[in-house]
Length: 275
Ligand SMILES: Nc1ncnc2c1ncn2[C@@H]1O[C@H](COP(=O)(O)OP(=O)(O)OP(=O)(O)O)[C@@H](O)[C@H]1O
Image 1 (cartoon, rainbow, N blue to C red):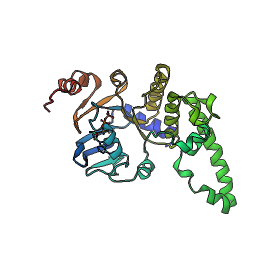
Image 2 (cartoon, rainbow, N blue to C red):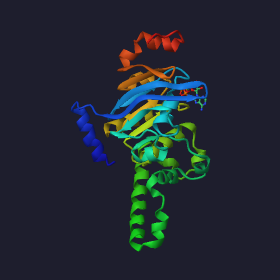
Image 3 (spheres, rainbow, N blue to C red):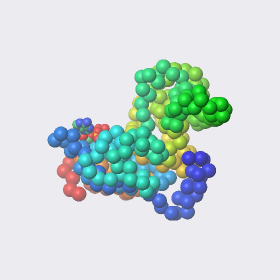
Image 4 (cartoon, rainbow, N blue to C red):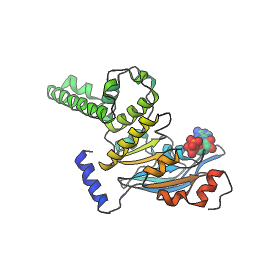
C-alpha cells in the first residue's frame, strides 16, 4: 500500500470513523490434551497500536499463529479487511497485507542487511523467468530493482541502520536484528503487522527508537498488534489493550482501565480469576 493510501486511511480514522481491520471470533486450538486457545474473540481497529498481554502460557503466541496461518485453528473465524482468512497459509495471509515479524533465518544471516531487505517482498519470486524470456520485462525488472533498492535505503534510514547496510545480517547485535526484522516486514508493504515481543533483548536506546518508529508508522496508517511483557511499554504506547488469560480474553479496553481492572491484577498474581 502506498504512503498516500496510508495517510488517507489515517485521515478517516482521525475523523472518528472506527473501522475494524481484524476480527477474531471464537478461535480455538488444542494440542493433545492442552487447550492453548479456548475461546478468543476480539477486534482490532484500523490504524491503532493494540497490545495483547497476559501471563505466561495465556495463549498469546498461539493466537498469533492461528491468525497468521502458522497453525490451523480447531474452530472459530479470522477476518481481515472483511475477507475471511481462517485456515489460510501464512503466505496467503501475508498476501492479504497481514504479516508478522520473523526471525532472520540462518541462510539469510550470510546475506547483507541490504540484501535481506531487497529479498523481503514476496512478489519477487518468478522474476528471473521473466527476465530470461522478455526484453520488455527485463527493463521492468531493472526499474523494479532500482525502486526496491531505493525503498530498502529508505527503510535503513528510518531504522537508522544504514551504517550496517553491507554487513552480514548474522553479525548484527540482537537489537539491530530486531530493527532489521521490522524493516524487512515493512518491505512487504503490509497494512497490519503482528509483533511478538519486539523489544525482547533490545537495549533502552534501541527500544526508544523502535517505539518511536512504531508511532511514526501508525501516523502513516499502519496497524499494529503486539505481544509484550513490559507493562510500561504497553500502557504508555497502546490505544487498546487486550488481556488474555488461560486461553480466553479476560478483558480489553484503554490502558488505564485495564491497568486498574481487578481481574487483570488477579490474573497476573496467579490468583483464582472469576470472569
Ligand atoms: N505446539 C504445542 N504443543 C503443545 N502445547 C503447546 C504448543 N504450543 C503451545 N502450547 C501450550 O499452549 C499454552 C499457550 O501457549 P502460548 O505459547 O500460546 O502462550 P503465551 O501466552 O504466548 O505464553 P508466553 O507469554 O509464555 O510466551 C501453553 O500451555 C503451552 O505450553
